[in-house]
Amino acid sequence: MADTINYAGDFRIEKAEILTSSGQIINVLPFLLHVSIFEDIFTPSLSGDITMFDNQNMIVNGPLIGQEQLRLVLSTPTIKEDKDKLYFVEEPLMIYKVAKQSKLNNSTQVYVLSFVTNETLTNERMTVSKSFDGSFSDLVDNIFVSELKSTKIINIEETINSKRIVIPDIKPFDVIRHAMTQSISKENESASFLFYETKSGYHFRTLESLYAKEAVHDYKFFQANIKSDDKIGKDYSRIRDYSILGSSDLLLGTRGGFFGSNLLVHDSYNKEAIRYTFNYFDNFQEKEHIGYYDEEKSTPIFSQVQVDNDGNRISDFPNSRTHFHSTAIKNTATGTSASHEVNGNYSFSGSKINEWYLERQSKFMGLSFGNIIELDIAGMTGIEAGDTVNIELPITGTRNTQGDMIDTIRSGKFLIKELRHDFNVADKQHGIKMNVIKDSYAKVHSDEANPPTRG
Image: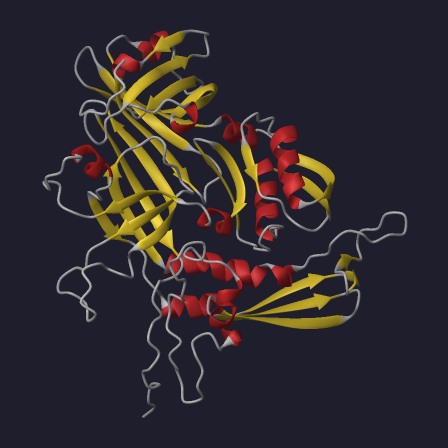
């Protein structure tokens, strides 16, 4: 088999076979029309589908009923290591649905087989009822190995605080989601944990740990007919098409508490109520954003311009939204819980919601209000959701006031939020459609405007 790339988007299918519920192994490689594989850092499982034609009546003879295993290997030519391929052999994909079945002619039909990974089905088949002592990162590892029985690689970022938790008959992924929302990283004290799956395994880690990754590729938007000695390399770096999906929303951000909010915590043990506030601009530099780990600057995506005659910015209104929470703290100095005691010792951390809730809320809302760009590029099997890429987009229309040709707002380092591999077998073309996100800008927005006047 040739190990050369003939064009950008070239690919090869090394294996495509279905193990049916009757024990048959069917090589479906000659019948494939299309393969899609989807990853998203906000979704716990990888998924996808294959489209195939059938002139052998495999759907009856197999039979194919939505209870099959799919062994699949797809790769970009020249890639040698399995970790850079879409490799599902020892851990096959699980077909769960036969969809879009249609007759092509008297002897041939076409249908779509949808698949997920095995952990997704295991999660739907069970619940967890147990008590647990330890950190949230230990809990995630325990659920993943002991309950889901997974042998896949899981990248777990270590968390702080020892917890005593009673899990009340809920699904494993829901246990992990609960841990995800309350976890604080030991590495960077961030509360921005994610739980998701890619081709390389599962990940329980913070946004900041993803921001710190080096960009895996540089992409620019330019015309396809530019002559070059390295045409294939240039095509792999070319953005074929793009759309701007994200936009700032001042009203929604104010209403949701993105700019400013209160957290009122009632401590039933100490009979006190404590108010915490969050201010987007004042808190911005306390946590790392996507440009922090590179030479690119990280500045807020909104302006600090005054919005009233009292000198207030949009972040200076914490009463925009108020959250309430109840807790019981035995020792206010250490934050230990009054609810969990072992041999007279209160060693477990209480619900320190003030350390994570407002920050996490604003962090993830900020991704929605920042730059979200949908890109179409030539496919490579080595790239995955959670990677970072460098993007360069041109100015649309006339040059900006500084004379730049590059859109400085919508260029720079981006995080891949989601991507979909599309393998079109008939056209022999592998394309990727990805959504990339950025929670900060390289340049500071001006704040010199006068506040709005009142009639």
